Length: 269
Length: 350
Image (cartoon, rainbow over all chains, first blue to last red; front, top):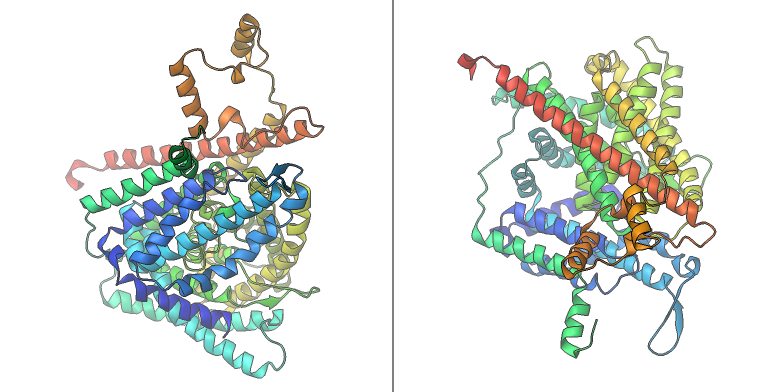
């Protein structure tokens, strides 16, 4: 399956999760803000910190469970993200001069900790972003962003993009498939000249489509604003959810595992 | 060329989010005004469809000339040429947000950095300062291709450069600045060739097509106050970045005086006398975004390269701080302007 086809299929699968699950009972603003708290706490962890990051995996895992999303779906989408993070951190064990003595007495480079930290960060951030959209849904996310005072024109643009990607994408999918079936042994990569010609053609079709859409919108009384849908209501459960995750992120900032470990073992920190 | 949350620090991430978010708010404000006035009502479906077009175009991997690798179009320069810098920036912002959420390309906190690298630079720096002054209504095909090629390369290379700066200043990776730069820049120069050629190809097609009238207006448009704002932004950023190289690492007058009195070399590391001061100092250290006007943990001053590292870090703090200040000032100005306009509306029309 080509990248475009898998993208269209993948995009369709996102909206199938959003309607079900307990997450749909919450205000989308709550989920967006709690995801941001988690990501900020994650990026605030020290360079070689691994222990601080571990409890933060609780947020994407909670979304995964409450939105009834199959874990294999998440794994398939996270794997393509990892190589870039690994590429950046892979040389750290050799580049970093410092060493750490492990409890067994063996000495290893501090670079292994930074590599593990970078990998864990990539996993948490990718899982949080993917599960945010999968659990909330594309249109609810737009409503949530509008509720957070993101400019109306940007929200309209997002909704237009959501709606017309399938139309334009499927148009291009047919063109790409036609090329693929006739391209023989050249797989995946298109010659630059041909890519430019195909895009010219797609551009012309997109313009024609935009013109038809505009006429249809005008016929329905379009005056420059797309209706936002039902207003959002902030409830007590939203406050509890947000306060809970913000507090948890703050605790993680102060190394929750170490605090808990010290408390349980009675050892000074 | 997306930056990931895994490689960015909260200081860099939030600063870039403020800058890119401010630019997005201003762009939306400007475009909304034109759309509400009714003169550009068709802009909304056009922006939506061109966003979908760029999104689909990014899925096509073309062969990078002269190498065995492949790349894809970023599209911001193309959108700026077709729709104008403000509308182009809004469209690329929506594309990048969808990419961050649907494919985890980049991240939530790195969104600002990605929007700056892939949207702000082509739309507000490369297009108004290079593409637009060099292309006029009567420009030949050859000139449009040449200018698009050069600006495409510059946009991609500048984006790759800012990725390197942001990654190194975030301090998560150990890769040295110049080594990282040498890895990332050459491939982006080549991707820029593809970006430029495809931009030229679609732009020429757009100008000569039946719907070309839509875009010819854009071709002849004069760039207004954005140029002035962008020029001031660059000047302030460069000035702050360079001046901070000369910032003294010695304690300031007050610190020096206290140090003399208490016979200490560094009052910044002197523990506070009582418990309240100690606790508040700890709290300040743990919550401070720009501690001591430097980013991350400064290296010890006894190593041979420590001086240069501190200078770079100080520059980063100056750069980010001034950019943030500029954004806040611009936002405040916009707010005041809006209020002023509202208060200017006659009472009968309220």
